[in-house]
Image (cartoon, rainbow, N blue to C red; front, side, top):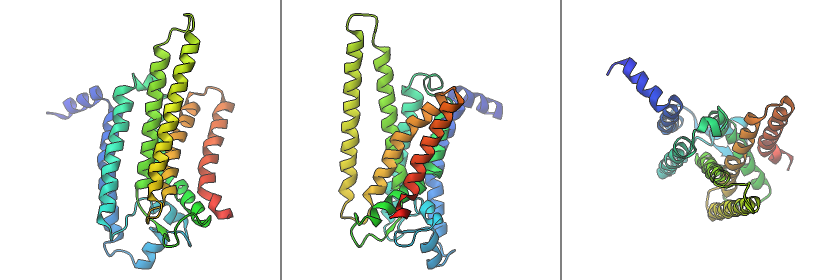
Length: 271
C-alpha cells in the first residue's frame, strides 16, 4: 500500500476522526512516559514534591498543572485505572461526535472539538487544582488528605463532555421530530425538552453523588466534580462562541469562559 493510497483512505475516513483516535492512543503513552521520567531517578524528591505533586498546604503554578498528569507511585493501579477510564470515555466521545451526531461540521461549529480538547488538557488542570485547593482551605477534606495527584479530574471532564454531547443529540432529535405547525406542536416540543432537561439534571446529580463516594478516602472528590462540571458547561459556551457572528457576542462568551476558568483556578487564594 503506497503513501498516496494511505492518504486517500485517511481523507475518506476523515482526518479529524483519525487525529482524535491517534490522540486516544498517544495520551496513555505520554502519561506512562511522563510517570517514568518523574519517578525514574531524574529528579530529587523535593523537586518532585514541589513541581509534580499538588501539596495543598504549599501549591505552585507548576504543581497545579503537572499534578493532573502525575500518579502516586506507591499505587500502580492509580495510573492504569485512569488510562483505561480515559480510553473508554474518550472513545465514547469520539463515537458520539463523529458517528451519532449527523454531520458534525453542520450541527457543531467547526473547531468545536479541537478547542474543547485544548482547554481540557491545557487549561482545565489549573481550574481542577484550584477547586481542590478551595475546598481544602474550607476544611472540607479529611486532615490526612494533604496532596493531590492523578489524571482522574481530566477523565471526569471527558465524562462531562460525553453528557453534553448526549444532551445535544437528544435536542437534535427533539427539534427534528416535531412539526411545530400542527396543533399543540409547540406545547409537545416544550414537554419533550422539559423531559430531557429533567433527565440531564438527574444524570448530573447521580454523577455528583457517585463522585462524593470518594469522601473519606485519599481522593479529592471536589477535584473530580470540578472536572465533570467544567466538561459539561464549557463545551456549551464554546459552541455559542463559535456560532456567534457579532464581535460583541463573541467577546462576551470569551469573557464568560475566561471568568469561569480563572475564578475556579484562583478563588482558593483569597481564603
